[in-house]
Image 1 (cartoon, rainbow, N blue to C red):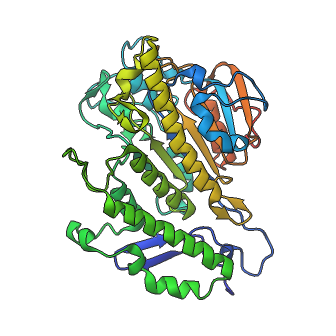
Image 2: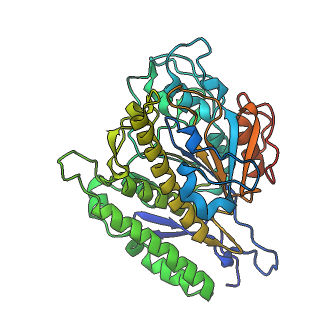
Image 3: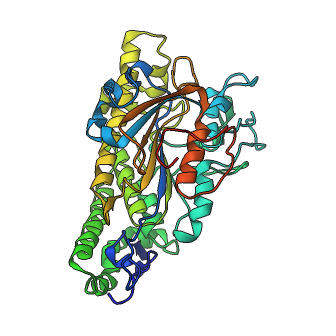
Length: 430
């Protein structure tokens, strides 16, 4: 092409718009400069604590053995850093009594102790993802994307706090960002047209059909490598569409909203695929993904645990319950490992989508039986970090120090976040 293709170019059709992945044609026109893919931030929140001896490597540095919970990440050990002794100090009671699950979620990305209330007078703080979303807003169609695999209640009382505190993402100190559970709604947010009526959405054709003419026109002007990338990207969109079409209520008769598969694994992987499409197309550069909600009722029969997750986490050191929590922990990590596989396979010029995304996997409770907010399970992947290491920081180092460091490396200037005391050392570029 004689003219560089805009990073924000859209394939448009009636009721549809498809953002493009990173293509060679987006290099500056008539320039030999190497085009740089944008930096992104993704937070994957795995709630309600871990069996920490199965999470934490015994060794520090690069010569460590992945414990039981993390074994699914063996293929990515050179791309991850395991960070120990980080703490969500604002999740502690601090005189407020019960409510560790509510405080865990709301304080994790804000570093702010939430006001204890079951009414409308909620107050917390702006979260790091929303600070990044505000910074990147002019470069993407969606400032951020908030998703979840378990219904996030927004009314009533949850763990002696207002249920809105179950959100980890906060646009302001009084405005939580509720996550979306339904993959179909996420897909329509990414590729649909909000002006379509529900009946039009129900009967519409594939977004690829709606944008076919412009897609063909664009492809004729692309080089062979970009044509292949575009074809792979559009194929991934169609695969997601097909899975959404096949989503149906569980055979037991339990009602499942349209678009939500009855299998947790299928649900999680569908949302991970949508996350990949959102990041690869630069539709957004900021995603928060809750694998379940804090203190939730999600069950995991696929992992051999038909009981509700939360009830198992109060294990009282009973071997049977400890084993069930360990199975759930490893099952969550296996879905995450599958997502990292796909990110690493997604090329962006000379790098990959994983290379260009800071991905945090963790949560705001360590030992679930103690509802401990110290020594949180924390793992960092991608982003060009000095990976393949287990780093043990000083006890009670604020988790917000990590968040502040990630913002800086992603090009988002910020001096302080919540209870942060500085930036983390030992991570390249941080």
